[in-house]
Image (cartoon, rainbow, N blue to C red; front, side):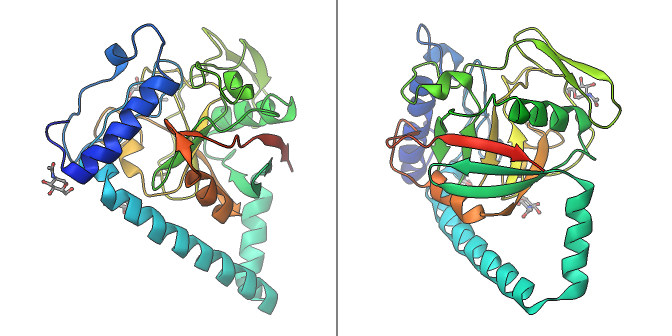
Length: 284
Ligand SMILES: *[C@@H]1O[C@H](CO)[C@@H](O)[C@H](O)[C@H]1NC(C)=O
Ligand SMILES: *[C@@H]1O[C@H](CO)[C@@H](O)[C@H](O)[C@H]1NC(C)=O
Ligand SMILES: *[C@@H]1O[C@H](CO)[C@@H](O)[C@H](O)[C@H]1NC(C)=O
């Protein structure tokens, strides 16, 4: 923390202790918190099962400000999209239809509103098929967002977070089992605690609005947890320098304002004070 500016340090203190409290193993939370590396490096590692948090001053006041700007820009983009759709700009509209037909759409119904995302089945078939299987089997229904940080992201998908106050929220994953690869038809596996194979084949960056896999920081440790980026978190790309490796598997195409609103709710140790529940995720 010594390297951080005051404002950044304050925000980080909150973020770091929050992560340890919410998601860290109860027995030794501090031991799992990795040291700050370099100021320009990773903001934070989005960890599913043995959380660490790597932070730089980018997570501080500047990032919070960016979050507000991003929120406004997204609202504006939403309004523009709606009005251009209303005016029937044909070429753009038909291009969008083609893009959406190529990949499935997930519709998220939360207690704060709904949003839709394109799921990148064409780019990361195993990761996308895993997500779609968890959606269609109802795995995510009744789960709460367990870690939200304004100007950064909303983390979701831990089965322990069916209880919104669970101390072990952030440490769970799906059961071991099989699911179908929707592109090849092959049978894929979740194993060693519900983990899927890393699929670092697509170079989609952790841009605002993208969905990205949480993991433990170890290879092949993604399961059911993922996060919604509400900022440019390109330092989390698996192909960026630094320790954070989070593959993107989708992008919000409607209702980004809801994802941003979720990131800004009042929290206690990054956990929303008023629980935000996923009612359903449907795939079409
Ligand atoms: C904070 O980050 C900026 C640019 O990212 C850098 O120039 C500055 O030295 C950093 N400050 C500290 C205290 O690390
Ligand atoms: C993914 O990255 C890991 C670690 O960087 C590497 O070991 C693995 O071979 C990569 N997998 C693919 C499919 O590129
Ligand atoms: C995110 O920030 C990086 C580093 O400043 C920049 O290179 C990249 O173009 C940005 N990506 C987006 C989607 O804005």
